[in-house]
Length: 361
Image (cartoon, rainbow, N blue to C red; front, side):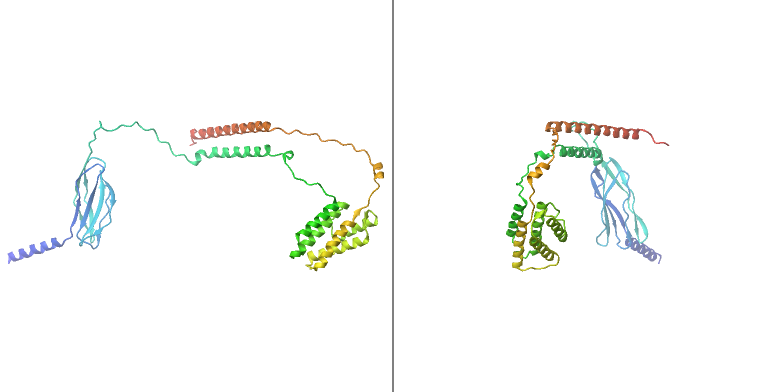
C-alpha cells in the first residue's frame, strides 16, 4: 500500500511539472565581433494571458530592434536584435515574463564581444580635418541683402531721372493747323465715312455732329461752345448778332437751334429720326458752318491802334551732358556704399559690445 501511494504521488508530481508553462531564452550565437548583430529570442509554451516585456538597457550591449510577437504551435516567440560596440564579456540578465499573472524568469546568457585586429601598417592615414563650419542661413546675409536692395533702388531712381530723355530729344509728328472752316468741313467728311447712323448708331452720330459745330464756333468766335448749354450758346450768338460782331442771319441761328434741339432729343430722350431727317440735319450743319463767321475788321485802323511790343527772349539753359551725369551718379553710388559700410561696421561693433558686456546680476 505504501509503494502504491508513493508511485501515485510521483506520477501526479511529474504530470504537474510536465504541464507547467516553460519560459526559455536563447541566442543564435554567443560570440560576436564589434558591431555585429545577433538574435535574442524568448519562447513561452503558453498563448493565453502572457506578457513578454521589452528589453531594458543592457550593460555593454545595445538593442537595435524589437520584433513583434509570433505565435507558433501554441507557443509565443519574441525576438530581439542586439549588438555591441565595446569588446568584452557581457551578460544578458534574466527577463521576467508574466503568465496568468505569475512571474517566470528566463536564464541569463553570456555574450562575448571580440575586437577586430587591425594592421596599422596597411591602413591609409589621412590628415586631421578642421572644424566644420555651420551652414549659412538667411540671417547671416539679411542686413547685406537689405543694403544691396536699398543701393539698387537709389541708383535706379537716380539713373531713371538722370538719363531720362528730355523734351528737346523727343520727336513729335505734327500736322499743319487747319483753319476752323477747313477743319470743320474735313470733320464732316470723316463723319460721313464712318456710316454711324447707317449702322443704327444714331446717338453717336448726332453727338459727333454737334461736337463738330460747337468746336467750329469755339475756334471761330472764341467762345466756350463745347461747355455751354444749347440755350446758353444760342443766347451768346444772338448777342453777337445783335452787336453785329458776326456775319450771319436769323435763319442760320434758327437752324442751329433746331439742330441742337434735335440732337438733345436723340441723346437724352431716345428720339429716332428718319433717314431723310438725318440727311437734312447733315446739310444744315454744313450750312451753319458756311454762314457763321466773325465780322471782318478794318486792318488799317487796327494797325494804327497797335502799341509797340517788347519781346524778351527766354534765356537758353544748357543741360548737362551724359558724361557729367555719369560722374554725378558714380559719386552718389560711392557715397551710398561708404555710408552702407560705415553703418554695417557700427552694427557689428554694437553686436560685439552686447556680447562681451556681462549682464547685470
